[in-house]
Each structure stands twice: as structure tokens, then as C-alpha cells.
Image (cartoon, rainbow, N blue to C red):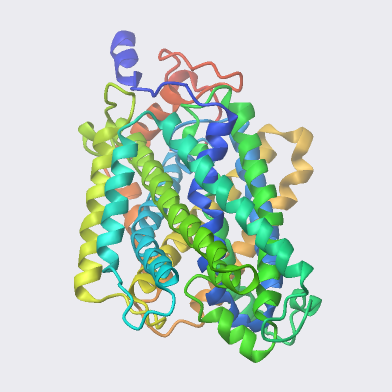
Length: 504
């Protein structure tokens, strides 16, 4: 009996060949700072006018609260399933699967959305190159997007440590370019369309709570993916130290960056009605400001970095979705072939499944002409629609992590139980964002309702899949790692659980 149990608990595990920089690289790649700052401010500006910096301050506070839970839990639990393991070992196996399913759907949707993002940024770059041409050459966005998908697949067939180096290089160039532009705009006093260095952008300016919290989800979208490195718990050296450090570094660094850059963009366009309109209608806000304040050559640099950032986000998102699918399938909640590693220790079959899904839905979106979000740019509509759905799915998973953090602090960290106030406030902020985004919806095809529909599917699988709870429980016990980075022996089965968990 004991030998049989040992065999059942043996799971394929990736090579542990990533350092702290590798974990940071994945999270930065999914967050895509250049992509976020090039395309996420427009929707916020149209919703709240010149108060864009305020929304990003609130977003930074919310993400800071949420990141606390991931940091505390990854100090003890590290596995390829990210929230799948964090919630599974604190709330319970079914809740763990539900949370992991939400994260997996999020990253698959981000990968899909970035097919459109690449397409729109490529055409923006071509417009900049051709200047005042009356008939500028444009490429159907699906072609640019699918070329990016092919490039992402080629990189995904390499060892993942090579992928994260590419992600770090892409975002490093983008961050430097953004900071240079921001310094120039602020140094010149901004105000392309009037307003100057208007610090009232950090105040509500008469906005309602509904408008403010309805816009915060757009800010959250900019940080979505900060926890991506949590999926590298089995591939990172000393994960109990390096994963929390990567989470703290990415959240702290991007929070400062996003607030500064969004302030620079807002005053750069100007805080008058004309300036706000120019900001909200921009195809690539960084590139447009680069051309206005520096010159065409800098606009081209920023356009190129936006393309590469969208590609990097696609690459990191699909890679993470594939790892989550691998973790589920390895534990018996999915086809066995998706739970296998290739000779490079990569979940190739699971990655293929995600890539095929992204290509299929991308083609359907292009040829059907849907979704329509009202921007007038089909590629940008595709990006916003699927990314917002993904962000809402992620917020559900974030909420479950907050619940898991509360349970963990009360049961296992009595020395830090005072910190329980942080996940409580974080969970409250997530609920407020849900409420103010649902209350204004008039169509059942709206992003929040589609996201909730997907999560209901995940919930149904969690409760109806035969033996799911015991399979997840055994799988987590077999693949989780001690804080020192040592693996739990396969013999430490469900009768000797390494960490106390909720009932099945």
C-alpha cells in the first residue's frame, strides 16, 4: 500500500535553474510596463478626465494590499500552480483549483488580448515611419498578431531561463525610455494643450465613487501579472526567499513608475478638455508624446518598445497559462499528456494547447469583427475586451488569495496576526471594484459578466469533477517545497500532510 502511494505521489518537476532575476523577468514581462503605459491610460482618461494619476495612486494602494498576501504565502508555499497552491493549502483543494483556474484563464486571455495589442502597435509604428503619407501602408492586425504568436512559440521551445532574459531586456529598454520622456515632459512644464503641471490631477475633482472605483479596474489591469513569478516556484532557486523578493520588487518599482509616468502623460497632453480628449483618443500615448516633446525618432523608439512589450506580455502570459494547465493535468485534473515535460523540462503539450486556443479565438475575433468596444480600432477593441475579462477573472483569484492569507495568518503566523487587517482591507477593495464595475453594465456581453461566467465554469469543475479534492490534495503535497527549498519526499502523503489545510 505504501509503495503504491509513493508511486501515485511522484510528479514530474521542472529543473530549478532560475535566479531572482528570472522571477522578476517573468513578472515584468506579464505586467508589460511599456504596454500598460502606452495603452491603459486612454480608457481611464475618458472615464475620469484629468484625474488619471489619482486612479493610479489608488491602484497602487490596492495592488500593494493584494501583493502582501502573495508575499506572505510564497514564503511558505511554492509550486507551479501559483494561486492554485496558495489557496489550496490554506482554504482547501477545491478552492485552490477554482483560484488557479481563474489565474489560468486570465493569462490565456492576456495572451489573446495581446494579439490585438501587437497589431495596433505595429500599425501605429508604420504610421510614424511614413509620416504625412496620404495612403499609409497598414497591415491587417491579425497578421502582425499571428507573427508575434509564432515568435512566442519559438521562444517557448527554448529553456525558460532564456525567455526571461528576453523579457528583462525588452522591459528594461521600455522603462528607460519612459523615464526619459517623463523627465523631459515635467521639465518643460507639460501642457501641450494647456494646464501646466496641474497637481489637482491627484484629487477627485468632483468625481463620484462609482466613477472612481469603476476606473480603478483599468489601473489594476496595468499591474495584472505582478504575481506571475509565483508560478515559477518549482523552477526558481530558494523560492521561499526569491519569489517574495521578486513580488515586492516588481510591485514597488512599477507603482512608483506608473504614478510618475501617468502624471507626466496627463500634464503632457494637458489637463484642459482638449488635452483630456487628445489623451483618451491616442493610439499610443507614449509614442505620441515622444514625437511632441522630443521628435519623430524618439516616437519611433517608443512605438517599437510598445510592440516588444506587447510581445513580451504575450510570451509571459501564455507561458504562465501553460504552466498552470500543466500543474492541473499533472495532478489528474486534465489530460495526462498536458502534465508531461519535454526533454528541456518544459510543459510543451500544455503550452501547445494554450497557443492553439489563442490562435483559434484570435481568428474568430478578426473574421467576425467582434468584440466592438467603441474605440474605432478593431485591434485595440480586441485587446481591451479580452484583457478586461482577464483582469476581472484575476480579481476573483486575488480575492481568494486574500481569504487564504487571512486563514494562514490566524492559524500559522500568530506572531504576525496583526497583519490580518491588510488582506481584510484588500478584500474589501476588490469587492468595491466588483460592485462599481457591475452596477454600470447594461449588456450581458460586458467584460464583468463574461468573467463571472468563466469563473462559474471553474467552480462547476471544482465541485463536479470526480475525486478532484483528493487529487489536488495529493498533488500539492507531492510538489510543494519547504521554505529552505527542499522538496517534500514523495512518502509524505496525505496521512502526513506537511502543512495543515482546510478539510476537503
